[in-house]
Length: 308
Ligand code: G3H
Ligand code: 13P
Ligand code: ZN
Ligand code: NA
Image (cartoon, rainbow, N blue to C red; front, side):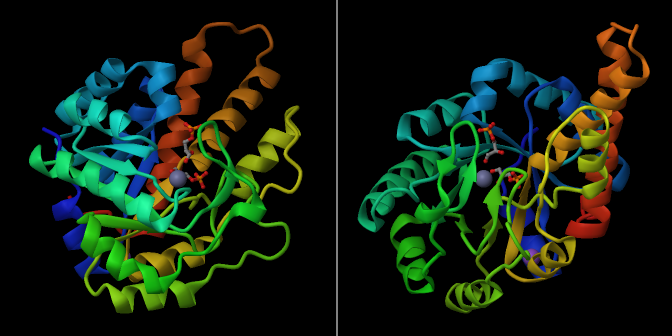
């Protein structure tokens, strides 16, 4: 059955590694991720955004994740990604999720605390864990749209009070990452000094890194080669992610890398097989590509292989 993030974060913190939190939208994505985790014996967080829930339907996603648990026997948390209202969080908690994020980062500090605490009170009563966020990431996604000028690094002076007053189980911080495939115009830079200060203020407390795709160049290249156009796509260098995983970061969010692997594989397949039209012929290799990306992340970036 589903697990919360409590035990996995405790072990990740102590072991100096991070759990992969991968966004899921359909069966092939869920299968690719969970087959990789099974082979690598890795604990997993599968996360669902409001957009994913709208696309695939809450019940379908829950049942697919239940099937993955039955097939793999792994500890898997089913987590709401970027919940923006109490009602959305409540709906996911009532509907079987084991963890939720309430992202109040676009509100004032006091409003963020009030909303987050409301979700924590409801969630903890039902044995569900909660991720909060302080600071704002830049980036363009369906539901998450913050322009560069509205982005703001997390203020380490606020984290203790936020965690104490809300009771959250983990905290997402903004240190220079952003959502999507275009994260840096020039050189990639993360504020590790902020992460260090946060971990000093919150000893032993699990930190979450959003926007952590590395935008793997091999897949961007395939996309551009086979009719796509993504000039200047750039992600977080994997060295930086490895560094964060050794520190207080216990959850690393990855979505864009899965999208790119899937899209690259399907573009290439169509270019090379113009007469094929059976979805299994292109979704199969796309699922395999996701599996390969996830294996690479678990083993070479997160360090959570063998920890399940
Ligand atoms: O944080 C954003 C995730 O990549 C999910 O994106 O809202 O388009 O499903 P989405
Ligand atoms: P990426 O766009 O870097 O994959 O980030 C995903 C994320 O943070 C989901 O919440
Ligand atoms: Zn995010
Ligand atoms: Na860590």
